[in-house]
Length: 205
Image (cartoon, rainbow, N blue to C red):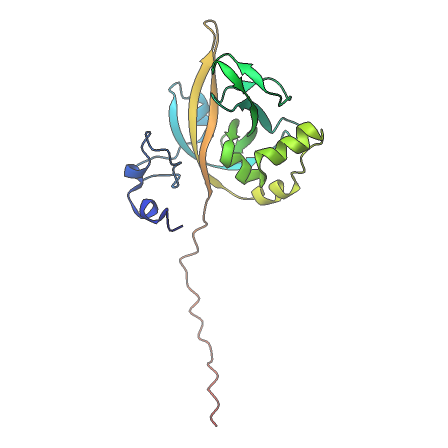
């Protein structure tokens, strides 16, 4: 908290530049407009968007982590952590687990699926990537998500999304990635209870 104090007190628009290595702490910086999930799905342009939505993990049997090269961070389609010769790094290297999974976003206009990974995913699951790999790959068990469902239930989050595209020359697909999220704080009612209350006098002696 002490290390982040200066950043948190500063202007969000100045502290969330693309060149910064620090993930944005404030989900909806001043001047950014919230849009609906339906609008994101139909938007042809790529970029960053801000939504208010509920989050849920509907697919409990998905892979919640991937293995990637410890050097170039390229994902590998394997569950074996043996050292290998990476053609991109051009050296013998090891594979490390990285948290990565799909989460569903729901508002009153539509439902969509986005990816969440690394520290954000670990925070949501309350597990490290090593723990996830040990349970799902080494022990070949499914993750217990009861605590996650309870934590997400009946809550609305302010979410920063990035829409990007990938594909071949024939087809183009769009994907959504969560860059940050924060639970939306409910604004208390402005009405104040003005009912007079009888005050008990202090005893003397």
